[in-house]
Image 1 (cartoon, rainbow, N blue to C red):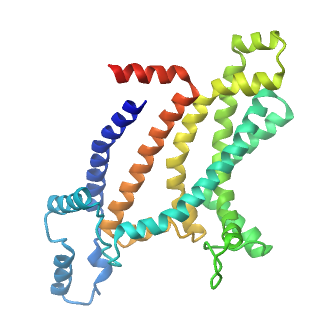
Image 2: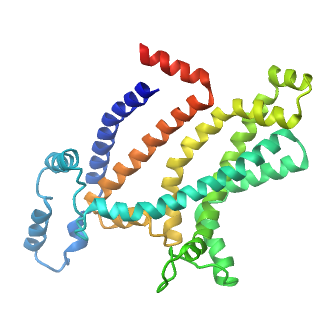
Image 3: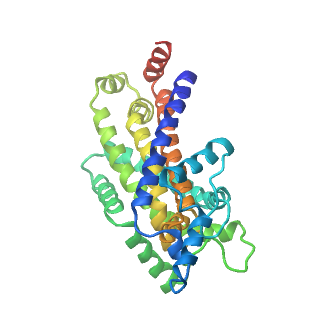
Amino acid sequence: MYNYVMRRILIAIPVLFGVTVINFIIMKMAPGNPVDMLVNPKLPAAAAEAKRIELGLDAPAYEQYWNWLRNLVLHGDLGYSMITYEPVTRMIGEKLGPTLLLMGISLALGLAIAVPLGVISAVRQYSKLDYAVVTLSFLGISVPNFFLGLGLVYIFALKLDWLPTSGMTELGSGGGFADVLTHLILPCVVLTANVTGRTIRYVRSSMLEIAGQDYLRTARAKGLREALVVNKHAMRNALIPIVTILGMEIPILFGGAVVIEQIFSWPGIGQLTLSSIMSRDYSTIMGLNLVAAVVVIFANLLTDIVYALADPRIKHSYRGAARS
């Protein structure tokens, strides 16, 4: 397993390099540049050109990319923001914590709700409870995040005045645990509903596929209790598709947080991403794209490791591949 993980990490290096090259090309092809956002359009062209030289935008595109890559590899430096002149590493580090908090709680709640409901729905197929769970799943998938978020803000924040509309803490407060928890409720509900809707369908279909296997009928014929048959024998073999969904949810949540954080003014990566795109802050955009690529690769690697823990046959195949 150790050799397999190390090989995957080594393979990830050229993948990350390719991602940064493609992102840089797309970014350069987009209209506009940071100077347009920084310089007053009424100023003479010489002032704009001086600003371009100061930011290093007068150099050829390949030279700009090489300077960025060299600083990253040799110094672990993502550069400075072309708008605020702050270190990009520090900007991302300050925003990453709130995003991980929002994503982690939403993912944990979504799985905690979806897995039991998916199992119950499969065990009681075609019952009223099954139809109710499937309907809940389709609602979670079909309702757009921004629509659900705005609806919750209108009902619980504006009409009932139960919850805050935006931010992570109340202005002027110390930002204690209760304050953060109160601000987490609405964005977490939106992301959790989406995660729950997607996951229920996969858990249900996976359990239905396993339910007809011969070894389950044999276990029931031996007199094992139904709860033991479902929770021990069926669930373990249904874990592989569920693990796949878990690996997919992490990048989806990371991308979906952009919309949710904008709606609820959550001070995370999503707000930083949108502001960087709008201001054409090239260095910050490159850093954010690199972080997103690392998250996707890490999610895939984590999924493979959990595969091996859930199914010993996969672990043995990894060992065989490592020896070869």
